[in-house]
Amino acid sequence: MARRPLPRILSSGSASITRSREIARTAADSATDVLHPLITVVRGLRLLAVSGRQKWVATPKERRGPKLFLGAACVLVVALVPYGPILALITVMGAAAWKGRERTPVRTGPDETETARLRSLYEALVPYFSTADDPEPLFAHGGDWAKAFDGYAFDDGRLTRLQVSYPAYFTDGEAAARSRIEQLLHTKSGRGREYHFSWDEEANRLVMTVLDALPTTIAAQRFVTAPGETVLGFTDPDAVSRTVPVRDGDTTVDASPVVWRTGGRSTEPHLLAVGHPGGGTTTLIRSIALQALQNGDVIVVDGGGTGEYGALAGRTGVLAVESGLGGALATLEWAAHETERRLITANRARQNGHPVPDDIRRPLWILLDRPGVLGHLAAADGRPDPQELLRIPLRHGRAAQVTVVLAEQFDALDTLTETVRTHTRARAVLGPASREQIEAVLGVEPHTTPPSEVPAGRGYVRLGAGPVLRLQVPATPDPYDDATSEAHRQAVLGLLPDRHSSVEAAPAREHADEGPATEQVPVAVDTAARPVDAVPVEAMVAEARPSEPLAKAQPAGAES
Image (cartoon, rainbow, N blue to C red):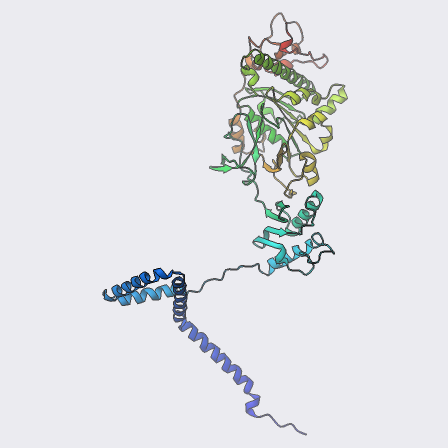
């Protein structure tokens, strides 16, 4: 049976309906474009009317009468002024057009990519923040992440801040539990950045923040500090409550310093810096030496023998720069006797009611780099470990104005003696290091995630029982190194004191002295006739012969 064709109206109806819709849509779009100014003005008038009504309702009843009278007076004045109604109409239309303009909607929530990242973090935290016995779990697979994340912030699609509320039964008092959460958030939020974690155990809240990089362009310079204060480096602005003006290139900015206080009232009189090769421990010692030379004397012992401190040799205030085992032992032995002499002299002055002499109050700094190397050489040669000679300066140096700074590498950390570990309460870790290595030196883990790649002089510092702070040491390179830039070279050279004259560097021996050169120890000189610091230590050890035993100096108080 042949099929009969459909009527024309039924076969072509859908096409005609589609064309009619397109024509209507085009006409509506054209009308909208033509009437857009009118629509904007009408929308603005409606908003103005709503705003005026809200203000009228908020006005107290006793003030409505005066306001109504003032409005009527304004309308009367406008009506009597020439062209007043026209100007008023133009003003109202302009205000309505401005009020009714189209505004770009402000995004109040995360987009799809950010929502996916937050949900991924939420799902990853479920095994750590949930238990099977919880009747109303805050963290559950497929749950609402908005209840657990109180606040968040993104920058170019990357998470920069996250506030997490966790259940009260989570063991936030255990360091291992906190470390697992921090490591998880660090991995899921993106590597290559440093995150700070703030735990609020009372409110069961964790705040993760991405930290900005510390400035590496601040070079060595004269810092605004009080006597007895040393700037170890710079940290985050919210970590300390003090700023100092520093030169950063051609500009002057306010930086947040890590100030280490030494002297008789210091609770952390000695410092230990640990790091890997190239981490910046030598830079830190060089920066401390330049600051100490402003009002003190410095002894430098370079156990590595790399010549990094050659620029300090022969300078005013630098008593010795030694890298050999014999010179290092003689210098440290003199430092031990000098500490004893200072203690005895200061004690006698106080007992007699006299002020402490100036040469006793002048700070003495003992800077020892890589003591483990010298310890190995001393053990092979049958000599005492140089660290044993630091026992007296470490124990009694605070009262004698003697400060000891040591720098060692991680691979030789076990060579440090118990005395050094006990009395170096100020600690610094420089260069790339794991959380376990940082905890082994500082005593506690940092509240940040250590990055895998850091610039030289970047690390962490802890003064005594204080918090762990991020640290960036000022750029203080060796000015005689070819790789040093000209700006940094001039900055370091400008801080170095003048050199000794040839007479001061090697004073003449008396004709009656027939003993070896090592017997001319400065501490045996009568301090009333000549201060001890007037005779540099290098004059004592310049002609020392390793085959002869070093003469032991007697403290000044032992003379009859």
